[in-house]
Image (cartoon, rainbow, N blue to C red; front, top):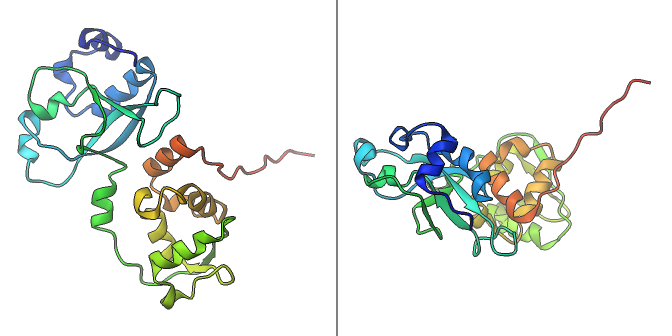
Length: 221
């Protein structure tokens, strides 16, 4: 892992570390290339002290940090390393650059809060046809949506738009890491990519390499 001291990071950012409170994503984005990783966005789940003490009993606090690939250059849940240049802001300690595996304080994409507040779909909206290459995904989606009610199968795979929105907003881990990439690609092909939270799309793309629909360019004759 490439390393930077706080003094070196300050020069790159262009402002003293004491002014970094509340600027976590900006700081992470500026420093990510120097660490060889990517800046990501989500929620801080840990304790809030000092500058953040006033929000200790409030809702989730948005946070940005850096994720580094594993030794082979790939991103996986098991090999990713987090670098957090502003973690000290929550801890109320002297500025330092933290690095390590996710210790439970980082929720990329804010999925814990989203899942805790997700609404049960009401079945409204026009049907959206989803097509999957791997047939077992139909069974998995049917299980998530109560197949007995929806009659969701590989022969009848039209879903009301509200159910499609629900599927798109499930945390990738809840949907299933083994199918999430294909589900996202199917949603994209069906014109429903906008339903997928952007930070989750980036997360899945980083780990699996999504193949998004690319509209053909039109040329004048």
